[in-house]
Image (cartoon, rainbow, N blue to C red; front, side, top):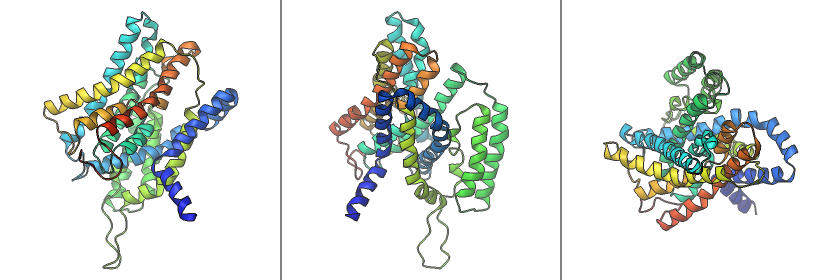
Length: 382
């Protein structure tokens, strides 16, 4: 019985199902009693989105960093450039499709929502990719780097086109410089515990992003590459090697981050199931068509001009992960409130499009199955 219970817990944790549970609970609560849900959301939103998600993005950055180490799937700069450029394509094509839909429909006032389908929800897309691709498949770090680049570009879009407060590069630099200097110093003096990196450099990085007008959830992204990835020499010759600082960071935060993801879904996904309208279809068209199209075309174009796909990353995998990246969901919901802050019917219809983007998950899973991808060991696709 104990082993069976442990197996269930392992399955839930390894597949990020707590995120799904939190999302479903939020949807139910918001549609049963919206007022009480909104009070809860306001209470926990800051702690979850601006603090708790720091560690999720830290683990995501760890995956990308390891993939970029010698021998990793993205070890060559020519390889790493491809998902970054693909992220640009995965934002440009959805925006153009959205604008085309609202323009043809004669609704120019909806053009403000062009950024909504540009979003990729890194938490959900990462979870779905792990359910589709084999363990160790280069599509997963490719998607992570793409999603992080997408998020970074999204922050620029928010700052430039939907500003809520003034962005200050000077304040950002004044805090980020000591953050990076501290992280470098810790690495230089071979500090093996990850806590000084997280609490010291990570806190300064968080302040840099916050003071600069950017989202502080990315605070550990510039810090993680400084964590030593080499295992320290054993104190006793012949003894088993201790995990590296980078590995210890991942092992310690793996379960707490899954709990954070539960609250992330719980605090962000409570959307009333309202009416459908043109904004709904424009957002869905941008995400379902524009994301895979833009990512596929820009990946192919990047390779054509001399950049290099990661070893084992087929174009069929690129097509599948392009559809996976069409899960805008909670990030797209955030863009809707920025684009249509006045509320009303337009906001509700746009939110429905963002919410419906999760339908890309079963579509991507079905396409992945049809193309022969299975979770487990790396398949013949590489």
